[in-house]
Image (cartoon, rainbow, N blue to C red; front, side):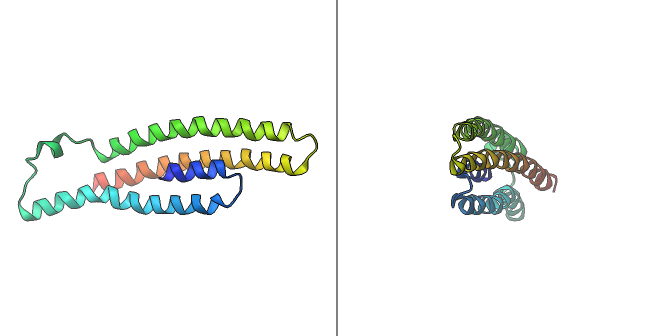
Length: 138
């Protein structure tokens, strides 16, 4: 969802979708914290109740860090393609504005927000990795 928020930010062009993008990023970060903590809670509860961890699905499951990394790599690949398309679109709007100040400004905004979206996506990758390491190490 953080990458989804970044994608919204990339394609917003400075419009009303920026607020939606910020809300998506905030909600995703809260959900991420809950989602990463959930398996830890499950292990603690099973230990308290004496269930043990004999379930092979739990033993063979990917670690949270691996899941987050795989998901982020996939989504960041999609974001990279989308941001490149939006940067080319913004640049072409700017170059073909033919003196129309409004169209030139819109092209600049599309390009600018595409770059901001990529920066947010990369920052989300760092954040997810660090939060996952924090919970996995605990």
